[in-house]
Image 1 (cartoon, rainbow, N blue to C red):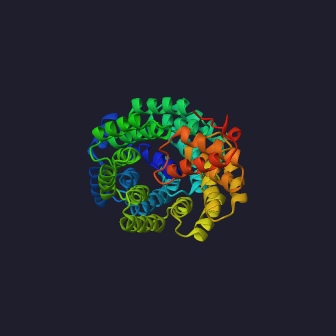
Image 2 (image 1 turned 60 degrees about the vertical axis):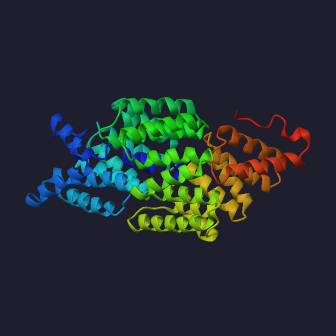
Image 3 (image 1 turned 30 degrees about the vertical axis):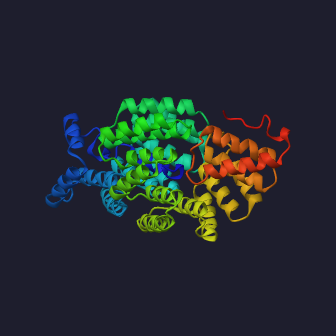
Length: 441
């Protein structure tokens, strides 16, 4: 899955049936286990029945809102966001001190990429329940996307001190990855896998995250094993299917990759999956199907936007990668940088500026993107291409080599471009230019 969407996915992974009480004190433990075991559709149906006869059952209101958020994870339908929003506003209108509704409001804001409101909701939730690790998670996630990294690290440390579980370990893993500690990120995600989650989907997604970490450091076999284990735990799980497809595409097994991506898209038309499917079509030489699939991805993105999700960064990256509308992409990338000034967004801005022909500003944005020491092949590729256009051959060679050293399969579209550019640069440079410049192996 693309890194620009990863935080939202982690956020919605976190016990989104929490309204049933997985961390709240009111329901009994046996009731919680029974509710979690029901499945999301059953939870929704039972909560709706309760509310028909008892419209002021506020626990049922919170339960239904949390189940709607979980449903988005399972079917990719963002129309559940406004439904959850309406329920939570109703609950908070009745009782502004409803800590569960407040926490879920923060989770909803994160899912919609509304990070300043998410931070406010998280702080309110933490004030209402200082023992809630989930509230700290909302705070830390928002701080990460707002580029407030020291604050986020403190929030995650408090979270894991309170409750060392799947959601806190997953956040620690992501923070370590951002700071370039990939072995530490893998260790933390292994802990998350071992901790397990309240519903099978949560545990399966954690395995997918571990698989992504392996893939991103050029270990596709280890990644594939995690994706297949996730599929075993949750048959038909779209994130696992997409992960398997990604490995197959990297190995040049395009028919198999197309089959798995189509399965994922059929059950969960997430824009990331649709874009990846289009990329396989393009790489396999099926340009008409690629173009149609990219149009579908754009339509899916607009559906998410219509339901309150801020996709400026994602839209910019899609357009920049596929040369669709660079002027609109640049506007979106700049807006995203103003709203969520993270290193990931800075990288998207750098790439969009480069594609639009502004390599000087692109270089500045790329430096900002890499300021934490993140070992991301795509980021180093972007910087290497910017440097190549600026005539900085030695730096470009070093960064392109580093990108391919981190992960030679980092992008179906762009890894071949990295290799071709590297060959071109080294062929016109003196023999001494390339020597000693290829760190990262």
